[in-house]
Image: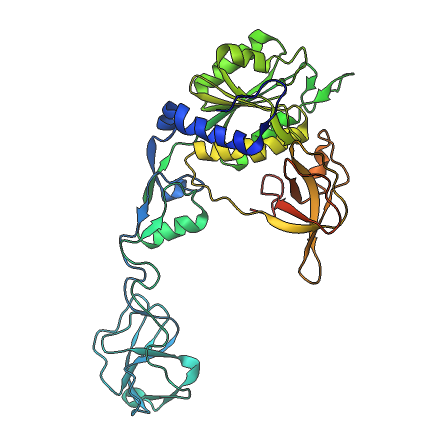
Length: 424
C-alpha cells in the first residue's frame, strides 16, 4: 500500500483500490465468516445475496402453448375452412391429435395439441354453424407458427438463471418460483457497528444546550446502512476520551464485521479516534484527496474493518456513499456493476482548485433538444446537509482539474436511493 505522510493526501482511486485489496487479502477470516451460507425459503429471500449460481431445472415454458385466446390448427394454404373439434384450456389440454382441416378453440397458456402448428386470435376468426357441424374461417392472412410460445423459449433447462453475488429482488423471487425453485443458499447478512464521538452531541427530542449540536450523523448513517439491507449495531455516542473509545472499538470488533464512526479523525486535540485505532489496530490511511471529506480514516481492528468518517454531516454522507458503500457491498458478497457517469454541460461556472476530487452537490436538467446541463447547488458547505434536498446529483470534478467554464463538459453522478428515491 502506498505510503502517505501526515501532510499528503491519498488520491481517491488509490484509496478505493487499497480498501478493496484490504478486504480481499487481509480480511480472509472476515470473508470466511461472512460467507457462511444459510438456506432460506422464498418468503425470506428478499434483498438477500445469493451464495451460489442458480440454474434452471426445467424449460420455461415447459410445453408449447398459446400466446392468446383463439384457434389452433395445422396451417395448409389450400384450406380455407376448418372444422371445430374441441378445445384446450389452461390446465385442461385437448386430448387428441389435430388433423388437416381441423381446429380447436384454445385459451392463452393452454397446451398446443399434437398436429397443430399455428394459432390465430379469436378476433380474426369467424365461427359458423351449430353443434357438431361448427366451422371456423379466418379473415386475415395466416402465417404458419404464429402466436405459439415454444417450450424453453423464455428459459432453457440448465441455463444460469441468477448469478452468485446477486441481491435478490421481488422479480428474482418470482423467477425462482417460475422454475419450481423454493429455496436458495444466501450469505449471512453482514453486521456493522456504528457510534459517534463528541461531547458536544445531543440526541434529538432533548433540549439543546449552549454550545452543543444535535447528533445527525449517526441516525443518517444507520438509515443508509439499513437502506443497503445491512444489520446495524448501534453503540450510541461515545465520550471523547481514549478509554471510552477503546472500549467501543473492542466491543464493535467482537460483534461486527465492520465499524463506522463519525468524527474524531481530524487533527484536533480532543480527536482521539485515530489515536486509539493506531494503538489497538492498524490505520491504512487517514487523509483522503476528496472534497468534502478529507479527514477520512480506514483501517482494521483484528478482523474487523474500520471507517472513520468526518464529523461534518455532508462530508460524512459523501464519504459513506463514495468510499464506504462499495466496500460494504463487496464485504456482503455482492457482485457490483459500476455504473458509468453521465456527461453534462456546465450552465454556469464551477469553482475548483486542483488537489482533491470534488463531489459538488449539483442540479442537472435536460433541455428541449435532449442536452443535459448542470449547475452547482447554491450551498456547498460541508455542514449544510439540506444541500442534498435541493440538488439531484454530484458534479464530479477530477483531482487535478481547475475551474469549469460555461459550456465545458462535467461528469455527473445522479444520486442513488441513499439520497433520492427517484434513482436506483
